Length: 132
Image 1: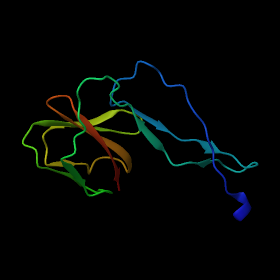
Image 2: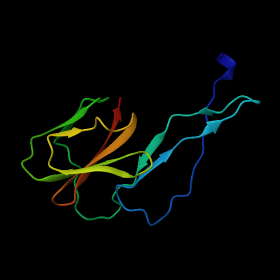
Image 3: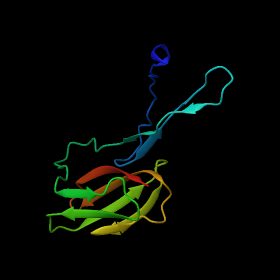
Image 4: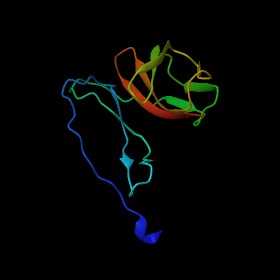
C-alpha cells in the first residue's frame, strides 16, 4: 500500500459567461490495468461574484446539521429577508424558498448539495452540506 498511493492533478478551461453562484462539479475515474474504474470524490467549485461592486459575504447564518437527514435548519440573527437556493452537483436548482428557518430535504437523494443564501441587496454566501 505505501508504494501505491498518489494524486491526480488536472485543470479545466472555464467558460467565461458563467454567472455568480454557478455550481461546477468535478470528479474523475482512475483505471488500473483491466479493473473497473475507481471514481474519485466529487469536488464542487462555485463561481463567485467577480464584479467590484460593494458586496459583503453573509456571516450571520448557521446551517445545521451537516450531514442532514430529513431537515436542514437555518439560524440567523439578521432580520432581513433572504432567498435560499439548493443546487445538486450538476448545478441544477432543486429547491428555493424565501426566508425559511428549516428546509425539508427528506425527498432529496443522498449526496452533496450547495445551499446559496442571498440577501435583499444581492450579497450571498454558499454552504456545502451532505444529505444522508
